[in-house]
Length: 147
Image: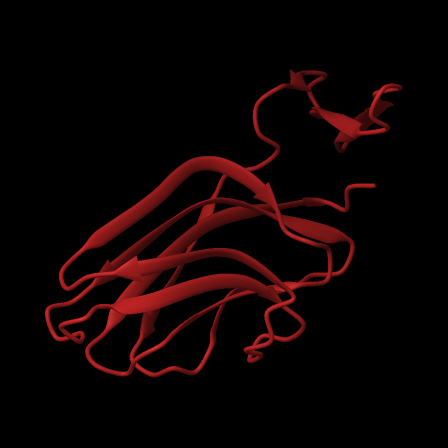
């Protein structure tokens, strides 16, 4: 028998479904389901940028993000928003995940969490101003659709 197997269980108190992966070697994997992959974007306009695309039958687990501003952004700083959207080029915020008011040459690391992105939604980012450049690196991995 080759392949991987998934064991599912449901918490009777919360109706939350949990999964454990059994490898082809018969090992139960109790760590995170996958390993994070980076997605890097440089924001130089106010147009939204896509960090991770929606994929059929899977959901994204966002595990971290690092935002940095160069020295050419406005003196007053800039606002960066990370959100779920209906399309990769959409500025429509179906669900705002977080908003960061960033200063010149500032680095904002948001790491060490696991946030499940709604199945079928794109993870997008945008900014409020066009001065300078803001770099965004997001980390995440896909899991089979939950629930």
